[in-house]
Amino acid sequence: MAYLLKLCISTLTIICCLSAQAQIKLSKKNIECTTWAVINTDSSFYKLENIKIVQLIDTKSSNLNDSKNVSEYFKDNNFITMQFKKNHELEFYETNVDSWEIVKKKGKYSWNFSKGRQALRLYFNSQLFATLKPVSQYQVYLKSEYIENPLIASVEMVMKKN
Image (cartoon, rainbow, N blue to C red; front, side):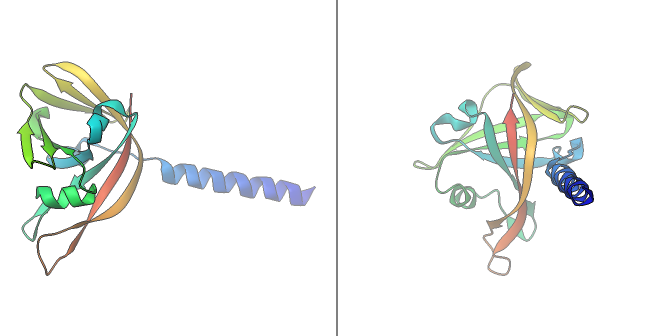
């Protein structure tokens, strides 16, 4: 009986630890003044329930906003780039890899983040068009243009659309 009780307690402890690791807590500072990209093959950004977004790091020693590096990460698929500016402004770009056409979407895009609900809301002309909630987060490595620093550590998040 004591063995069974120990086994149950051990199992519950492991489950609690795994659940705690899976929870992501974001804040506005994780979003504001950052750039993220998401694959958009066959308009998947607009259609899929879960999407993966990757943060594009732009430092003096690297330039990951380079479209070819992002394209390589997404295995030469079309993608969307979202630049989360201060004052909740959002710049929204669609990149077609076949033609290397980058289109800045017209209209007023904005964003809002609710820390309590862990919800990133995206708006177009003041109308909500997507709510994203973080599900999981991973460290990834993106190619850099610079030989002395060939890979840059970044973050990929799985977001659930509501």
